[in-house]
Picture 1 (tube, helix red, strand yellow):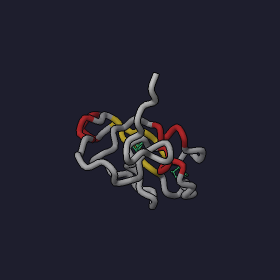
Picture 2 (picture 1 turned 135 degrees about the horizontal axis):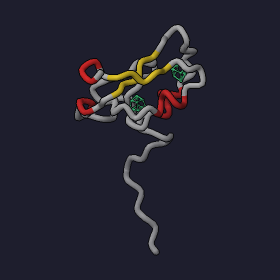
Picture 3 (picture 1 turned 90 degrees about the vertical axis):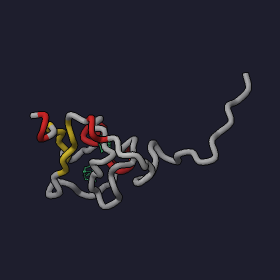
Picture 4 (picture 1 turned 120 degrees about the vertical axis):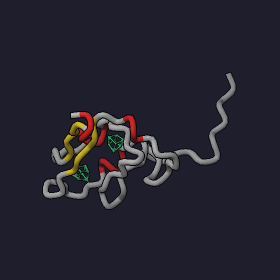
Length: 90
Ligand code: SF4
Ligand code: SF4
């Protein structure tokens, strides 16, 4: 079986870098990650693991693109991220 051709631009880590997505797609999200910056130690794990690159290196979430998957909350060893219902969805 022939090997698949790699795309010109492939992600180097587990996710694309922040700012990769261009079409807002967060409007169907039912829960959102909320970061407690008092608990956050800026380790950058959530930034690296977010599959949509919606967490910036400064550790803030771009809710226009976040789909509410919860991976960032799962990966945060400090428990600084909690998934909360969208205000309209509570
Ligand atoms: S994984 Fe948690 S502690 Fe690390 S930067 Fe993200 S929110 Fe902060
Ligand atoms: S909930 Fe998912 S898409 Fe949203 S910031 Fe966290 S990892 Fe990224």
